[in-house]
Length: 299
Image 1 (tube, rainbow, N blue to C red):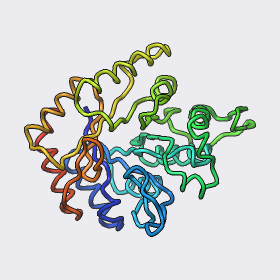
Image 2: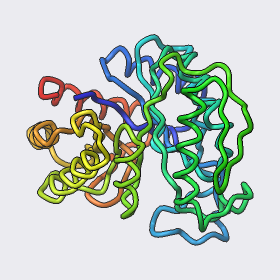
Image 3: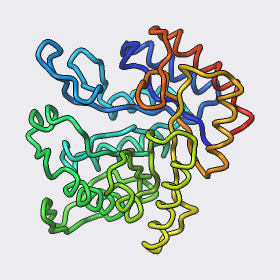
Image 4: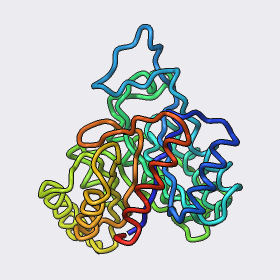
């Protein structure tokens, strides 16, 4: 099971030296991947309403994932990268395919593209995209991107996209980029089963509810004629409460459940996840080291 860390930069800031050193410390520690969240626009905190306790405000620092990961790919040699998650339908499809392909090439194949459909209308309005058809549109976006990665030239006519014998360069050497889905909407699992390489849920604690939904995903994957054993599952965990023994027990549960990746968040504070109290880079790195030392031999 791979072990990764969700970037705490939205809390501790985005200074270039700090983010570089943070990534290098993770790499030296033996962490497998760094995951980057995504928001293009934030609302004015003086006038905006918090959406379900997760409103993104303009004063929350979010580096663009492709820019940040391109920078960090040049600073590191082994650390893997993932978006967690890129809000796909608020972006132009061919441009995302191009950016992801360039990052894959420049990082030497160390990139997974995690995608979601988003929840914040503010961003879609500002980016001139339709918030209300984002799920349906994302299905076609995935097919277009996968074709652009695999084929030198693509002709495609869909409901939302038209490509006329066009392609991108460079393309990923393997002809594909691992495509992982976030989210928990009822349509998410069928989309993963058809087109995805993995799922990144964070809503399920280590109990029977997680086991049941993993079974549903594997059943749907098999129904699509694909091998469920090749379908990745990344679960999130947190270290804002509990102790080493409890963390080890949780990791052992996820490993037995068949999770392929586990991602530690020190900033997420929803559902069963609890953020740490500290707010500095040193606080978040210390918490990560403590957690990793506790669970490394269980992975």
